[in-house]
Length: 234
Image 1 (tube, rainbow, N blue to C red):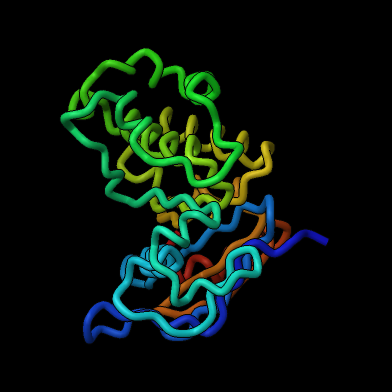
Image 2: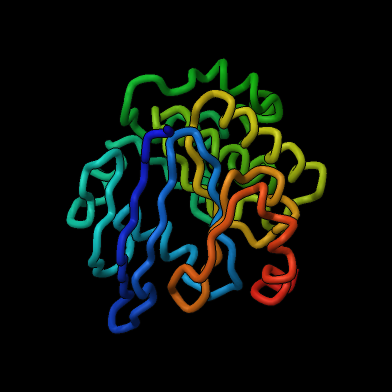
């Protein structure tokens, strides 16, 4: 039986007066890749942001490694071993690739060394001294993920990492996720690109209107394709 790393129960979240999440329930077990699917505006990114405490107000239960975090500040959530890679990537243009990589603090022991990161992302080694603005979209995305691997985070929240990237780069990111899974990382993935996410995930959750409407496992994917078509238009 795998250990439960993340448990969300009846999670509600707001931005100001806007009630975005309406009772989200989901679990992620240690070593799993779980994908959160849904159309734009379904509440997937808000779910990610709520996990790390970046929405306005939240209520419900949000346990990481059995620790209740619903009232914790974002920096305290991070210290439970959580790394968040937002859709906008957040690369500092005035810093080199390596300076960007070294920027976040260590939050837990066991983070990847710079050498290990460069082994996984050889492009970043070649571009170590290039300013953030000179990196391609794919290199920026690799850097955004690499940055959280150095911190010691073991639960990775990856938001739309394949968006707008060339197929060859998307394939590299898929290989990266499989490598991280083999190393024991736990990954919650928000993806619009179903074809990217489908072969990677152990389990899938579908969101609509700020709540989970369906969940199924990888071995149930084929039988759920019709339902996915209606929810996602895939």
